Image (cartoon, rainbow, N blue to C red; front, top):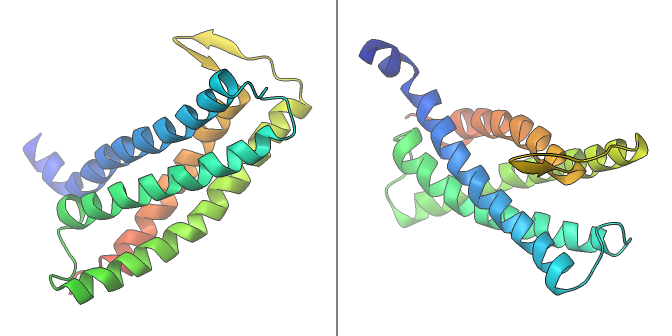
Length: 160
């Protein structure tokens, strides 16, 4: 078992921190949506709710990038610069890669919500209520986690 862990340590640790990062990101995203709906009185069906979704998407991204950068640098890839300048350069490359996957995440989020709504999707409850928004975040998260791993491993935290 130990040999198996050692062989796949990087991927296992990446996935663990990916889950943590995703939980933080989704927590921010859904907290904003809940705040808008329940405290702001804005219906998720209202066109202006898409503006809330976009703001939530951006704020979730910022939270996720910060959590992911520091966990990936220290615990996942055990690599990277040690000076402030090197760390700033890595953070710049990391953030730029994440801007690309933000676009991917946003397209998948809005596309999945649109598709499910066009199909007259009816949410169901199993522990959580599986709304179109929840499904969209699940789909987007899977694709984005894989893409971010590739970017981080081969472009940002390359072993020297």
